[in-house]
Each structure stands twice: as C-alpha cells, then as structure tokens.
Length: 353
Image 1: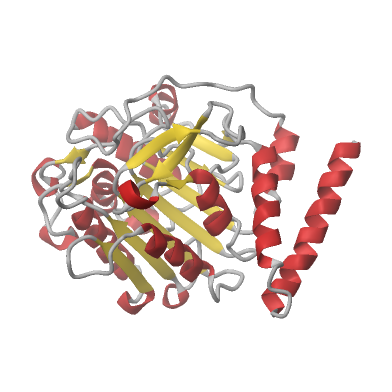
Image 2 (image 1 turned 90 degrees about the vertical axis):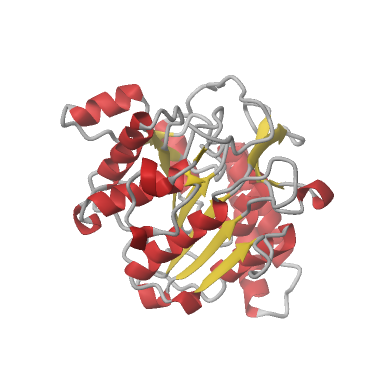
C-alpha cells in the first residue's frame, strides 16, 4: 500500500434497496451520452499511492516518469503494458488491475460503472470507437504542494495517462493538463469546472472525451437528501480549503449531463471514495466473488448500481436545463429550453403514474 488519497476516514458501506431493472433502464436513457468510469476503489475505501511505479509495477521507462504514482492509474498502465491492449476486453482489464493491486498488497477494489449496460466481454477502448484526432482529454493531477496531506504521484499519473492517450493517437494539442507543478495551469476549482465545459464543447455524436483525475477525493454530508447513504462524494481541487470541494451533484450536472447526445465520455478516477462519484446506473465491482467468476471463465454482467438514484438524476437534469435556458437568444439556450419543457412533462407524467 501507500499514502492515502483522502482526508476523511473510511466509512461503513451502506446498501440501499435495489431499484427494479426497468426503472434503472428508464432513468439511464435520460443520460444523453455514453459515459463510462473506471474508479480505483469503492465508495467506502481509500485509494493509495505506490512509492515506485517502475519497481513495484515493473513499468518500462517509456510508460511514465517513474517514481510515485496512484495505485489505480499505475495498475491500469501495468495492465496495458503487459498485454496487447488492442486484444483486451473490459473484464480482463478490470481483473488484471485487481490482480496486480492484490499482489502489491493494496486492498482497494477497482470497479467499472457506465450509463449503459455494456457487455463486459466487449473490446477495451478508452475512446469507445471515437476518432482519436477529434478526441479531447482533461488530465488533472494534484499533489497539494506545501499543503497538509501532500501527495507525491499525481503529476506522474498525468504523464502516464498522457502517454497512453498519445499512443492511441490523441494529439497533445487536444489535451488540457491542470497540475500544481508551477508550470501548468493550476487545478483550481474554477479551472476544473471550466475544463468540464471545454470537454463538452463542440462534441458531436460519436466524438470521445476523456477525463482523468488524480488527487484527493472525499465524502461530505449530503445537504439536499438525494444520497441514500447520506454522503456526497467529492473531488478536492488545489484550492479546496478556500473555495470548497466539488461534490458529485455538480460533477453530474456540469460534466455527465452536459455531454451531447451519443457522444462518449470515459473517466479514470484515481482518488478515495470514488466508486460511485459519477452516479452512473450500472456497475461491476471486481470484488473477491467477481474475481473468482472471471478466473473460472465466466464473464460478469453489469448490474444496476444499488446506489444509483434516478430521482436525483432527474432533479440535477432539471436544474442544468433551466440554467442553460436562461440564455434564450442562443441556439443552445433555445434547445435547452425545449429540453427543460420535455423534462417537466416527463416528470409530471411519472408523478401521475
């Protein structure tokens, strides 16, 4: 293991009643884009740094700068370097990440969640079929230099992901990198939120966007009652002590629901309490039981996420559409106003039923 990437202490898992499959499917259809996330741990777990990516994980020199790195990012890089990534399946990537984490005595459990119930046996693809020359990537690495809880490997994680994306044909000019290294634009709250808007900007159906976050993650008390476990998961920008953390509701509104219809968003979250931070409706957790299934030759199927809250999704969507609709003189504002109206009709109909 290594240094923890979370200020708060781990909390006990809560398992709310599972929604009916048809309810989840109906709610998932309201998410316009294909969104997929690899997270390095479950909500109740902390994520850790490895001290020596080259030594512990045997990464070659061309895979990254060496030194410290997040266990999630580094285990993914290890998986892609040990195999021909073009032949890997999603289930194999997740299983190999868990295998390496176990081997190096990390207790965190990786998981994959998605806005669609994908076949885990389908080919691994960080762009989900999008053309690399049209892809954009927002890469955020925060070491919290000079602050309490300083980390060591987050800048290195960004460099590792940059190389992985470049290997897949994504131009460096299509990447926005935020780091507290003194050279890059700083990973402030405002810059991260602006990065979300930049990702969704000009995306067409079939285009791909990638978001990588390496830094502290947290959990705070849910203030509006939309979390069944009473906690909001958060990202901690470099200036979080002054301006606050970025809660999952805001990520959902300004990233997930802002992505255009039929575009692709792939996320890698290397931080604590990140299991359901994007609040996506389907998931596979590579716990011990699932790992045994895979080792026996079975392919686990994505199941409804027990923490997914359809009502929360709709409420956030309503807020987002209403905010966009305040700009009625633009094409986007006009379309948003129409969407807001449709959302209200859908909600009223649901209440009648």
